[in-house]
Structure formats: structure tokens, C-alpha cells
Image (tube, rainbow, N blue to C red; front, side):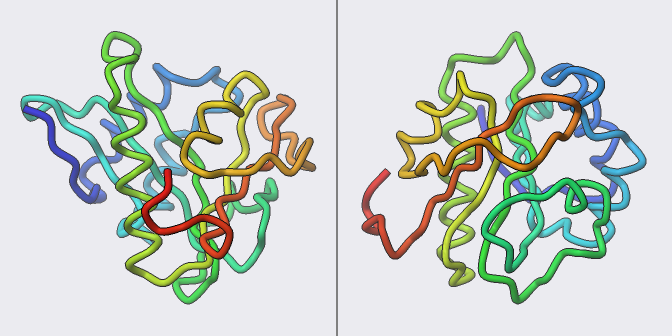
Length: 169
């Protein structure tokens, strides 16, 4: 059985393990940073469990910025609960559970959370090979990002609710 729930500070180690299995070391969020983020914006962390075992995550702070800058990854205190945009810092599923629709479930749940909270939309950065994945949810690629997080080339993606009908993704 698969379920999605809000993560808690007690999930930090499990989230860190999922992240470490999904991203290169330079890009993965550390256990310490997960703990800092969860202490400030746990209500914007979702964890996917299969048969009670954590296998996926999606998380990100809320901001008034329409693109992710590297400082947001490091400073949990920059979270603005009243902000316009829900950011996505990470969307990850452990390797052995990929290509089963779990990442899409997590994304759809986060999109619905942002709608319920009356955000303008969502923002994220991704590698070029994932642009098409995010476009299926209504995101638009805004070009190469100023972010150099982990030494990678990132692309800014924006899902603007005013440009996408509520039923569309």
C-alpha cells in the first residue's frame, strides 16, 4: 500500500537516506540541513511510504522569489509562510522504486497543497534531461538558472497557476 503524509523532524534520517540514494553527494541535502529545514517548514515536506517504508520525498520552502537561488538551499530561515511561490528543493524516489509513478504522485500532491494555500504557483530547478518531466505538470522552462548548487547546470522551471487551468497537468 502506498501513502503520502507530511514529514516530521523524526523523518530526517529517512529523508536524508532517500536523498543520498537519489542525488550526487555535492547536490544532496545533508542530514543536518534536513533537520534545519524540518524545524522551520515541515509542513512543506511530503514523504511517500510503501507498506510503511519511506521511499520518496518532495520538499521546499515558500518564498516570494520566482526562481530558486542558492542561498535558499542553505538558509531555512528564508522560508516565508506567506510567500507567493512554493519551491521544490527535492523530488526523489529510491532507485529500486522508480518508474512506477511515485514521483508524479508526490508532485501532484505538492501542487494541490500549493493550490490549497493560495500560492501563485511552484518553482524548481532541474537538469536539462528532466525538463520534459516537469512540463507534463504545466511547468514552463525559463532557461538556464543562476543556481550553481552542487556544481551542476540547472534550469529554472515555473508553474504559474494563472497560466494553467486548475484541472490541467
